[in-house]
Length: 261
Image 1: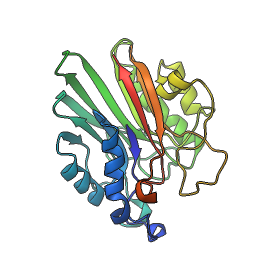
Image 2: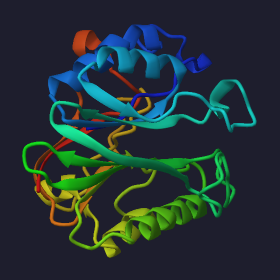
Image 3: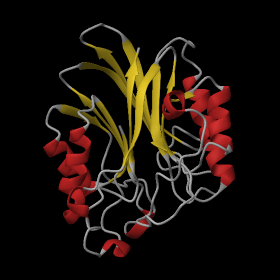
Image 4: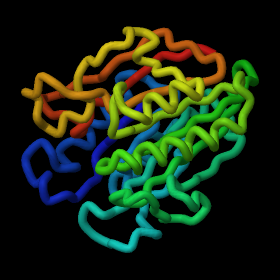
């Protein structure tokens, strides 16, 4: 699953049903209902990170919860983290890393191309305990303002992942703040990445995944994706619109895919 769980503590969310305390159990319930082996979250920060680590006890988390490299210390300037959770029962941890989506990817908190805030990509390499097969999982969140930043940030991901053989399995999850008609999608497709949802349902815009609490919009884009590369087949895919007790887990719908190596 790929889940933008929405950063906590925003003044705009001081409304019943939008506060983290109102929706955190809902968020967890929706995630656990799909029994995922891998969950990539975006906009994770102190409170939500602690909660998810406590509740997802059978998972290992790779990521970090605080905006240590952010020049701002409050409000929506926080660098929301991309945290990868994976099943400890099914997978063995092999290695992991982080790089920043900028011209200096090894400098923490670095920014380029007039991005609104620092963005990074976290990755883990896992070994399936059942089969012995190894693969990579990447979790990213692109800029939400400028087209140039989104394009250049995608180019960083494409270049980094291209160092692996074309048949080495890689999974890329995230909030790309762009749709199937935009440059990031074209760049990833040209680099051999496959949109899992499209592989199952066809190349058609089916509406927004970042709903922003405005459920009456008839038009919009899928901006949350699960991409695959290296001989990975999507067997099923879903935009998860569950709202237990009428409460949505986030201002994004989560996305889910069943993948086969």
